[in-house]
Amino acid sequence: MIRDEVIRMIRETAKLPVSDIKNNLYKDLGLDSLSFVQLLLAIEKKYSIIFGITEMEACLEVGFLIALTEKKVEEKN
Image (cartoon, rainbow, N blue to C red; front, top):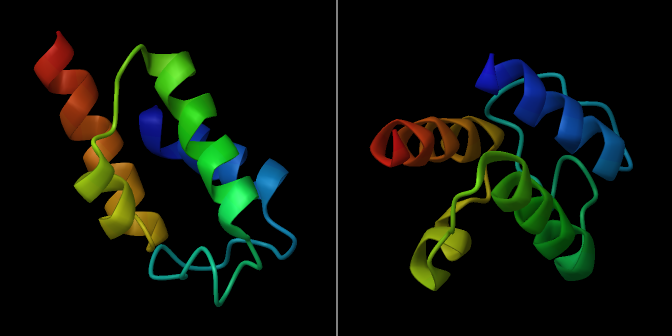
């Protein structure tokens, strides 16, 4: 499942555990701008998708990042 894989990737990147899909990647999970970009690039590579700049700016919440990834994968297929 995409959801589980994205959460796994966030857990590998975050300094704190993911406890809720409403967790903010910066405030709640301790990501900085470099780790955030690395996470997005890893997701892009894993699923062969591309996030636009405005989409990246909106991906601050775990649930939104999961939903956007699922949407992009679905659109690709």
